[in-house]
Length: 444
Image (cartoon, rainbow, N blue to C red):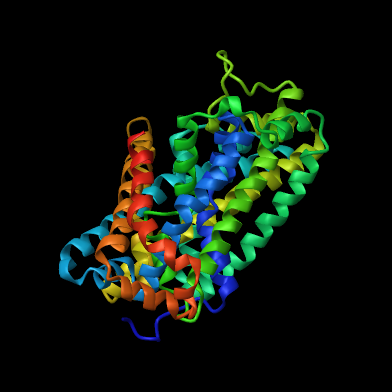
């Protein structure tokens, strides 16, 4: 294993907020509420909560344990649990690194749009209408510039390392995100129409229950915790050995799920407030408008109907979205940076700029070929690479890694492990149940 000189999170709360920040992204704040709204609200919420702990939590413990056992980047950590097939293990780590870099390349474009939606109304309010219109309209130049700005923000955080960069900013941004969320929920719930959205979200109508709903909830639970792309593995490698992994994994899962739940408390009532204010949220067939239309058209249109207060609420909402995007993007960039600093012995400040530059360049290629590439890259990474890699990691922990090594690694922070229920269930659960559930997600 790597030496103790390796960077670590300085505190347990620092790790929890950083890992939750990695997991809390646009998928939680926008993807989950719109999935809930499209799948019967409260029924989807209930199934999602079950799936977070039936599928995502055991896999989160597995990825964190691999990372801490290896105390290194994902390539080296995977080699450490599969020494008989070091080349194959290295290729798996490399595949995870490439997949997460590709996810960041399209994520940065979407985050750039959020920056535009944040700054645009402010410029419009001070009379800079031309600049505001440019920021809020779809164009290649605007997409490119805003993406570059967001990537530079991400690079600047990761450049400063684990404790001074990732942990420092995560422990600042996550509490701000939670406070903003709660303030906005309280405000939205006072508006006309909000109670209809709240009822849809919290009062179950089991006529919406279906096999497709279960699969959708399962997929959302898996993706919401950043599984399958080595982010949690690399964060796990920075955890101190005396930390109780099952416990902190549960805390990360709970915090991530709480943010998704609160997002539902905000977004679903906000949709019905928008409907009450004359904004369209349904298409001609009675289905919800697509999620990108909702976030970039429906809510801004609702904010416009609220006058001066709407401007403030809109600014707060997009600040919240940018924070969520940034806490996820820094964990994505850390994966290839950790690999470069340890596998190629590069200085972090050098590695972060050239790797960030390569990802920015690939993102620029997507911008210039948006119609052909944007949807394709999203599909390749989130629908194929992420679930396949996640399933392989589960199989490695369940079938390849020596069980006593996994036991000893987890026991370092959990001495009474063998007497508890966790160890009686977790090994066979990761070995059999998780791969079967993920096959359902993949082939459904």
